[in-house]
Amino acid sequence: MIKMMKMKMLQAAGWLLLLALCTALSGCDPVPSKTVATRASADVANRKINAVATVGMIADALKNVGGERVDVTALMGPGIDPHLYRATAGDVETLSEADIIFYGGLELEGRMTDIFVKMARNGTPTVPVSEKIPENLLRQPKEFQGKFDPHIWFDVTLWKHAVETVRDELAKFDPPSADTYKQNAAAYLKKLDELHQYVKTEISKIPKVGRVLITAHDAFGYFGQRYEMEVIGLQGTSTATEAGAGDVQKMSQSIADRKIKAVFVESSVPKATIEAVQAAVRSRGWDVAIGGQLFSDAMGQDGTPEGTYIGMVRHNTDTIVKALR
Image 1 (cartoon, rainbow, N blue to C red):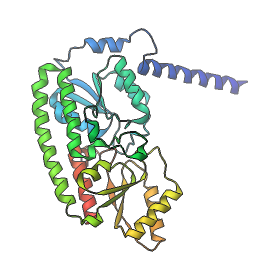
Image 2: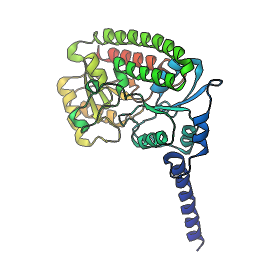
Image 3: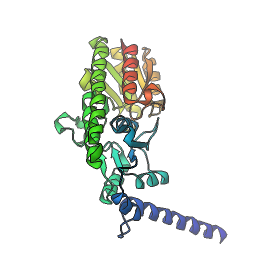
């Protein structure tokens, strides 16, 4: 009897938590929330804008464009996989208090996408930074089953579109500071032009026959397309798709046949699958190295060069060139 009562109490608590999340995220309560009403009438002229981003790359763009006018919170830190991320109760509170929200879009955030749609319906400016990229510039490989590749930051020229979206949306939200956002964006976009040229120059140092980038999941497609590398991911565009034993064996045979020098692990994806590939390649008589760790869906630790978008891209480029050159 006591056990049954405890179970009922736990079930009741679960339903209360679900109701709270539903009310906060999807507007289940037909009465407009106080948070939304307050935010809609808030005057940001005399305070910093509270901006929330999902992944670190977007947060970094916000910091560079927003400057001193914007306080930026990133929901997902180093090592976090956005494809599998589930919103926590703390995230709900953070999102509910945001003046404006920026996310990747193109289903990058997987299970969280519906949350952002519902937040927008509740009156919070909610912006997918990929929304203004022309569709003809987006990758849509057949294995993605009609969906676009969301990893747009690996083509620096595409990421410039995302930065411009951040600039335009901040200017729309805070018109008195529009000139500041334009000036900050112009300076940052110039740095991105320099970064693009750096990547092109460094990758060109790898002999064409050796420009094969093998990673845990297919995150580097834009990188390969822009900088002329063949990219092979053991998993698909999302880490929600698991690689099977057959995938490992097929890839290991290809690596051994082509005598590829190195494969790479990712900071936000468990390295076990790539280590399994390495072991399978060795069983076929070829010793492939793990060329290093790349940052794919998350940047490095705050305060390190890899904790910025530019530093992350440079790190990835240098790691790839060192291993494959």
